[in-house]
Length: 283
Image 1: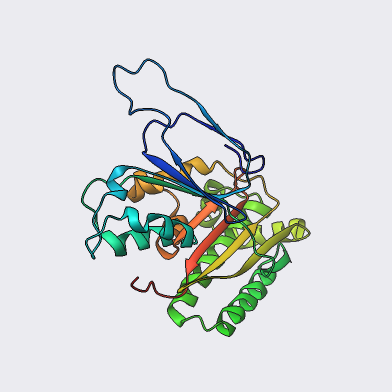
Image 2 (image 1 turned 135 degrees about the horizontal axis):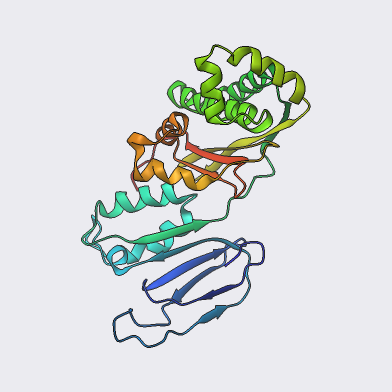
């Protein structure tokens, strides 16, 4: 499946069904076109769906839909509503938890969503200098204060943005990898080298797009930071999940704890972050 040319061909064999929501808010529920896989399975059928601009999709197992809610109903009664209303996977996961807790069985689902930048978002294009980064952080902080973001959440967002903008500057615009940065710091050469690189690369632009998305009872701060660097292999970040204690990237470990979600582009020179700025309320 591709979001740019949204055609979908599938062998649907694991989950009972899945949901699709188009960009025009048209909902589809697709049933499995194959029985569960077993040692006796000789072939599987392929299903092709009409091309539609897909906004998000959810594939789930019986463990999710057949769990009991606090009012004694099956979660299947609320699944469609929660899927449509969720602004992101964290929002959906919170709704599931509020309805069924840990569930009656193993809960398996895959939630995929296309990221879209709102036309109402703010955009900054800054030079690759430390001064420009400081000025952009002041601008974004003021934006958050004007939208009544509480001080704790504001501090978490600003710490995250500071870390990411410095990464975009030093690793992206300046092209300094982690090993070389550690060498410069250990030999007390870091400040002088950054000043030299700043003069060479200040013409390169760092783009920051940010804003607040309303979502019923909640609001979501979203920002995308992109630089003109070569990027990096984002697959190394799987170590955050597999072996967080030994992961050599303290900044991203901190960011993972402060944010609800973050996503890299394929090249690794752009990151989108998401942080809820209002508490989740009981359904």
